[in-house]
Amino acid sequence: MPSKEILQYHGIDSTSKKLRYTLVQLWRFTLSRLAFFVPFKGWRATMYRWSGVNIGRRVYIGHDMLFDRAFPEQITIGDDTAIGDRCTITAHGCIPTQTPLKEIYPLTVKPVKIGSRVWIMPNVTIIYGVTIGDEAVVATGSVVTRDVPSRTLVAGIPAKVVKQL
Image 1: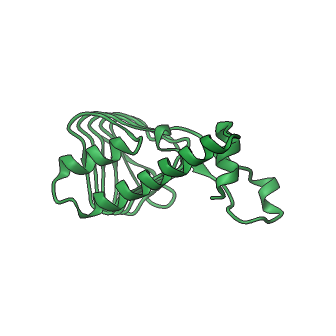
Image 2 (image 1 turned 90 degrees about the vertical axis):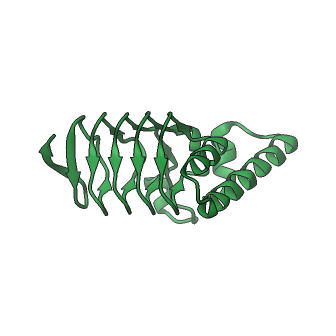
């Protein structure tokens, strides 16, 4: 995503604020790469917290996670939640190239809220604006484009309710 759009979104216009933002982005990128190599689950969650993601207590985060680095503060994960390997959680959508589609699909930033005691299996993608209720389960490989009610199992592309738990 072009940094110019992010800077405009945050109202950053001075050179010193741009430099600070660049350093913050570098910090977030470094933490996400370091988290990949950390063998201890608690350390991974801590690194993602440091990068700006709001993570509750006793949260398991699998290897090779991709949290939105431009807007990590828009992501909230409740207590006792487990997120499997290679998941992607994004809090924004945009077209990174200058095309006529940018006018149709401008930068959109919406929070992602994941409840407590949720199980997100490996290789799940969660897009911006989604809320996943408490004690929900998201099946492997699902793409979550809509809210998930509490105590339900969702699966598929796009994810749909399979059963009540």
